[in-house]
Image 1 (cartoon, one colour):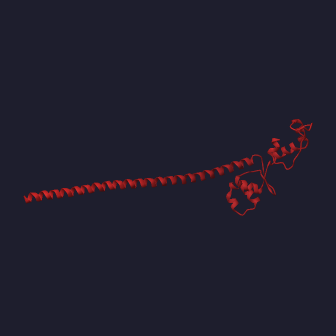
Image 2 (cartoon, one colour; image 1 turned 180 degrees about the vertical axis):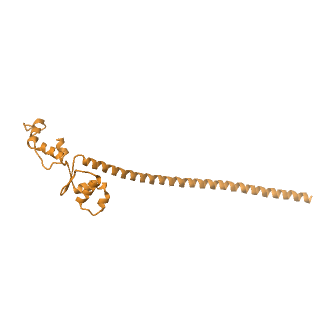
Image 3 (cartoon, one colour; image 1 turned 90 degrees about the horizontal axis):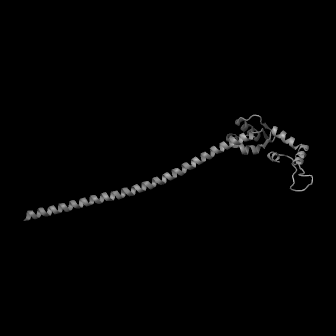
Length: 189
């Protein structure tokens, strides 16, 4: 059954699970014999030996178009686009039918691996751009905070310097007036 499920059969074959025709009882030898007599196992063997993977042009382009986006942008027929993608990937031994692409064993896994690599690179690029955006946003916010803190600090420092200069000026005025007063008193007396 695993072999049957792993393929894409175009017909349904009914088998009797046991000679008693009772549910939940499986006689493996009986089932294998029915599959052999019906030619199902031979069909599966031939299918696996030939082109086990079959995809319509639309399915193929929808899944593997990311491998060659420039081909999808052009006005190519689906059949021609599939051919161009397979040639670009360097696959040999595939067949192009009237409505489907036929791939040998392992070729679909190779295409899936390349697709995963392309999608992984795209995901890393998106993540890198997003992380750059977040880091820049945080940097700008911190820079604004530092500038604001510096401006407040410089304002407070300027106020202290101004206060010190004002006190010194006031002290000089008091000293000047006091000295003038003493000089006048000594002159008058």
